[in-house]
Amino acid sequence: MKIKVVLEPSEEGGFTVYVPSLPGCISEGETEEEALANIREAIELYLEPVEDELLASDGTTIKEVAV
Image (cartoon, rainbow, N blue to C red; front, side):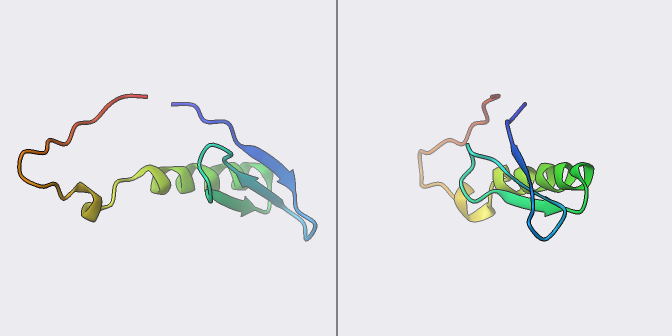
């Protein structure tokens, strides 16, 4: 899966990076490479299901879909 991110120089030095399609998914790093590695981890955590969200009532089925 490919997701577009916005990488901006930070006023304090380093870089800030965020994902427009994932509200609140933001990270930073001292270098571009570090910022991109950090946002990859942030995206994975953002998209990871929380166990509480997987609790379903009787008759409900949980499925996975590829995007």
